[in-house]
Length: 186
Image 1: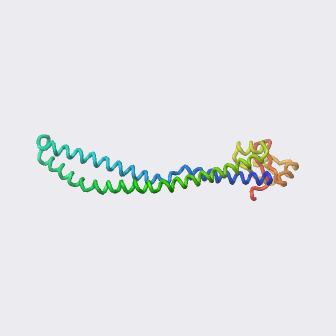
Image 2: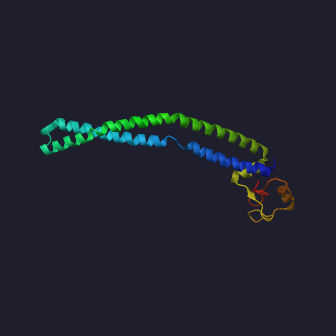
């Protein structure tokens, strides 16, 4: 492979690695975990309200007037039927989360395997490049195309280097440090 082909492959590998790392960072279980957290919070609030209402009702007339006590009994009557449905929802979401865990683990393992393969190939490609070319790429993470025999900084590329570029070699501009190839299209 020519240096130009190696650099183009390196650019492609870096893009694929970045995309896979982004996918690896995403948590496929987050929707379940968020829903479970909301349900648990709602459960805790309603359970605490029920406990408080039961304690207030038990304290009875000694602490509250008749209307307040009656209102607390009505609140408790409204709250009681909500708890079994909420508890069933909690159990259902916990079960869905547990069922999704193996699939997420498989997804992450596949991504890790692909990342490892791309990183291995990347290391091989980098190993085939001359150190000054690799250093220039690592520094800028970009490769530019020579246009009208000029670098992007407008420096005219000497004929000797233009011949090397046409042969598939890369060149580091002495003026701006850009890494140049003849053509960015494979």
